[in-house]
Image 1 (cartoon, one colour):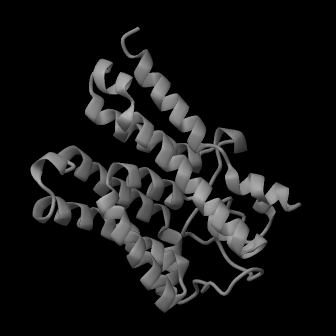
Image 2: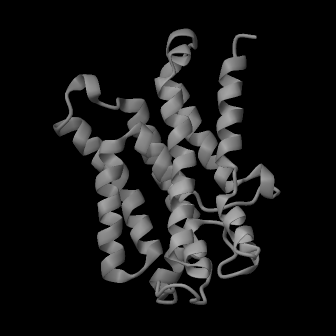
Length: 224
């Protein structure tokens, strides 16, 4: 069948994205992370509940499962030479790995909020936009101590940075092109929408600041 390779890419990326590293790390430390802190299986809840080393490990693993499949799709010669619509396969890979994280088939289609996985996936697609966005995340978090605010700021800035760098910095042969820029913008909007409850709490002044392991928290966002 002509479109079997496309389906295989989507299914494989979805399966990789669905690997619940936060849940696995929680089990390794003797807990079900879904019953602690915010109940989320993302890196922020792991960081709060299990400690820094586990939280950082979870962030790296969640980011990696976004980055690796997308970079493989982009670089595989077989995909580039034999599949039609190659330009859109990387986008399909990004959507699939993020969907897998948010709706993990291994956790009855529940999961995290997708920020770390999205960062890794878009890093493969547009590294020149993600790197300065990560710097912005760190600056906002260092000042405010709100993981949610830092994440929303970085996600919102990523498409703006991508467009600006494409237009004013990169030569034509290295530019992302309109489909990728539109996709990154839509993805950023969806990720921000996923954090609407955090936005409401920020506006109400009830969002929790990050203080470290063991802090009681509501449903947090950030690297989840």
